[in-house]
Image (tube, rainbow, N blue to C red):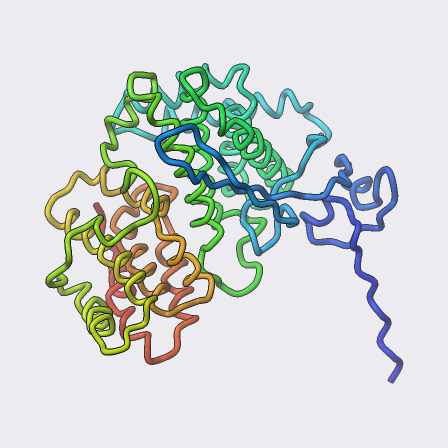
Length: 405
């Protein structure tokens, strides 16, 4: 049998080829695949930036990480291409931006925030007005719009690249503004942060990353929410009387805590769990009360108790809108230790997260929730050993049976 030919990897390929996960011939200034598809070749390395604020009660000081990732790598749902911006043939980039802005306003005028005309006006008009002259907010709008178009038309790979580019631009420029957030730019920072959070939430639907490799817990999404949460807390202090006020009024508990991670003091000690949460809750309680308890159990139980409290509030008749917003903002205040347990695929942490997504199933009537509970719960089920699967019976039953807020 003839010897197998050695495969030479492309280590210095252009960003577009890395995004498409194809071999680049590394020809400068324009590689062969980009020339064939009539897209602008880009040899800048991709950068993924996340920032987390560590200060409280004063101007935010930031620490950021940079990861060398491809724009469409399975290890991160949100990579982006650094300048120069992509020029995707015809129509011109200006016409493309107009198309994206038109789609954005159509989304908010026709399909979102029907429960509150003030919030719909804020997103469709006020936010757009404030994006004029504000690059990070304008980039967030264009990224959100292009991602929605890409999700609805997965074959349009160019739109996917546009979304990743604008997302990265928005995040990078917003990160640079963290230390100067004040009355002059708080509205823009607040709006851009919320849009970034929405996009990270729906990134699991990104055709560039979906179905690429086995399921893994959504660690990158949770980490991004943590960084965005710090920006929201800083900007929120300056927007209480601004055009963003309708959003604050519609979500009085938008941030589960004022600052920092979830702590045992956030909710009262749970004396007994409702039947749907009892099996796993009692297991955590017994483990925490053992002679040699695992310290990680206390971290998991704190998060599980908060999810249980959210469920109890819904069952007691809480406004469905408030439940949906708490579901969206809950990850902002997670204890980083819980996220690390998820990174290690700790079964207790994964089962707890599955209960969170089970509650989300009850809010399945809005487009950015649809399909996510099934995806996450079945993914967790596939990772668990048999002895742990008994604790996933209620989440799987709820997903199978549906139910709505």
